[in-house]
Structures are given as C-alpha cells and as structure tokens.
Image (tube, rainbow, N blue to C red; front, side, top):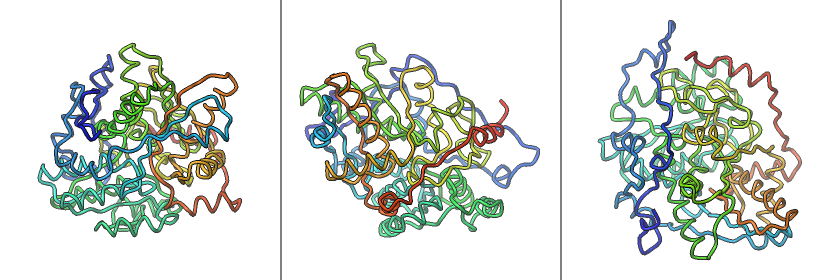
Amino acid sequence: MEQCVEAAGIPTGWYNINADLGFELPPDLPAPSSSHPSDLQKADLKPQLPLELMRQSLSKERDIEIPTAVRDQYRLWRPTPLIRARRLEERLETTARIYYKYEGGNGSGSHKLNTALAQAYYYRAAGTRRLTTGTGAGQWGTALAIACQSFGLSCKVYMVGTSFKQKPHRKTIMQLYGAEIVSSPSPGTKAGARLLHEGWTDSGNIAFAIEEALEDALSTKDTQLCVGSGESYSILHQTVIGIEARRQLAGLGEKADIVIGCLGAGSNFGGLAFPFLEERLRGESSIRCISVESTACAKLTRGVYRYDFTDTSGITPLQQMYTLGHLYRTPALHAGGLRYHACSKLVSALYHRGLIEALAYPQSDVFESAVLFARTEGIVPAPEAAHAVHAAIQQADVARKRGAETVIVFCLSGHGLFDMASYADYLEGRLEDVEVPDSTIASSLAALPAI
C-alpha cells in the first residue's frame, strides 16, 4: 500500500481492508416481505448502485486504483496537511504528541468530497444523469453538489430538518453548486408526507432523508440514490486520508499509538483508521483505533449487533451492524452528521471482534474541547469532528498522568464555519446535553425485523 502514492503525495489507490480481515462479513439479506407493504415496497425497483461500486464492496484486492479523472480532482486540495497540535499540547501540559489530519480545506469543508467525487464519476460512467441523496449536517450534501457539478450531473439533496434550520448557509452553498435542496421530512414525497403526518416535524434524521431520496430516485427517470457514508465503497474512498497520514507520519519519524475519528455511519473513522489498522490485522502492531460517537446516538456503546435496515423504507437489504433500530427517534443534537441510527457493517464487525474501540461523549463536553482547540490551534472544528478533538484531549490527559510519550492522530474531518448557531448556543449557555433513557432505546430495538 505504501508504494501506491504518486510524486505529489496523492494516493494512486484506495486501501481495501477486506484483503486483510481474515474473516467474512455477514452477508446482506433481502428485506422481508410485509403483509402491509408500503408504496416503496410495491414500487418497481431498479438497481441503485453502479456495477463498479458493487465490485469494490466485494473485492479482496488490497489496492484499488483511483481513476485518473478522480485523482485529477483530488489534486485541487490533496494531499491534506498532517499538523502537530503543539499549542494544544502545551495548554494540556501533556507528554503526548498530538497530530491531526485536516480535511476541511476543500470547497465542501469536509472529508466527504473524497467519496463524492469518486461516486459521481462511477454513476456518470454508468449512464446516470441525476443523483438524489440524504444529508445530516449538510457536509455530504455539499460534497455531492460539488461532485455532480464536476461530472455534469444534476443533484437533489434532502437535508435533515434540524440542520436545515440551524445551518441556512449550507443550503446556499449547495445551491451555488447547482443542487436543489429541501428540508426533510418534506411534503413532496409520500414518505415525507407520512412522517409529517406522524409528527416528525421537529428534527427528522438521516435515515428518513435517505428514504425520501430513494423514493425520488425510484420515481424519476435517469436518477439514482447516492449515499455518503456507511457503505463499504464509501469508506474505501476515504482511505486516502489514512494512507496519506501514515506516509506523512513516517516522514516525521513517528509511528501512531492511537488513531481517533468521530463516528456517524463510519466513513470518517474508517477513512483514517483502516490504513493504520492494516498493521494490526497483520500482527505488526497493537495500535489502538478509537471511534467516537455522541451519547445521544451511541450505536456502538448502547446498540445491539443485529440485522437491520439502513434506512426507514423497509425495502433496502438488511445488514448486520450495531444499531439503535431504524425507527430510532434521534434527538436534535448539534452534530447532525452523527445522527444516524446504525453503523457500517465493516466498522461493526471490527468492533464486535474487539479490533477497534468506541467512546461516547455528551455535546457540552465536546463543545468545551472544540472551543479550546479553536483558541489554541486556530481552526473551528465542525461539531462532528469536535468529538474526535475531545477524545484526543482525553487520551492526551491519560498520557500526561502516566508520563507516556503517546503519539495520537485524529481526523479533523471538517471546519465548523457553517455551525455558528451551535457555537452561539454553547457560548451563550443555551446548549444542553441530551439524555436518552434506556426505555427509549429498548422501544426502538423492539421494532427490529425478525430474522
């Protein structure tokens, strides 16, 4: 894998962790039939995924070549910098050395553009002319809007209602790149109208937004659904982050002890961690890879490892993963990109086997660390990325107490310059932690499909 880097430092191939797993992932299962099928279940289904993305998800090749057209787009901002957080280290008085891989320096402001460009390329090559998607905080929607503009595709984005209200400038930037954007749930789809009728007017969540986008794709000519996280191919495309980070660390004479990424569905964490985890899977290191989730949507630390739907439509294949239940009513936390009920089947399998770790934090603690990071390092983190910041600070404190020279690397997956409403709530004392009782999770899990 280390040889798959061109002279400019941009990877020429993505790292496929399937080559090194040493076990088979549980197979996807068809959705069970229903005695009361929904409109989508009765619809004339058409394939939503280009054949090449399907091949990538199933491939056992360690290195999968990045198409020249995609690599040309990457050159606009890649390689991204690996920065040592010296001022933060000094403030913490830690013996740890903290590095962060900054992915916010592109037009979308986040890591999401890595897979958006790849997917738009493959969809276009397969004959698609229009893509629909659901987005949580808006980073994925923005990235896909840019990617569609780059490869000549139309784009419609269903954005989770809470984030749509909190981040109006996300709508503007998506429109700037030619995308159409609506708040989800929306009255323009049967799924959205149903959800609004059922009282889902306060927040929505990414699973509902994806259901709306799927309905749109199924009913519109030359249109397909495109998703930005969780699927094996989307994590594959994000491994440019970890490949670059490993190479950059080696150039500094460093070797990571702990790698950290926030966890929504999995592409952020997997993109950084998987290339490092390769060493552990081969028995070459004992590196710790820590995923960080919100206590309000803690699928790894509070969910179950079961077959579940990836959205709320009831027609998509079932995947075995850690889940809170596809009908989990996600609280309206500020980290919109973490408001997903489940986790990638790849990340889930690694966690189930004890190969990675998981931590969960409340948003007040996360924002406290985000402000400290901004004041020391000069970058305002996105609320999602701030979870990784907080975990890195906690691990640096552990190193200080032990006197250990631990090397910590985390993914600063995006900037928070579109998240000023969130920071205003924190700075002005309006931000509250969200408590999710066990009974709420138990009720959601009770609706899991029987397999």
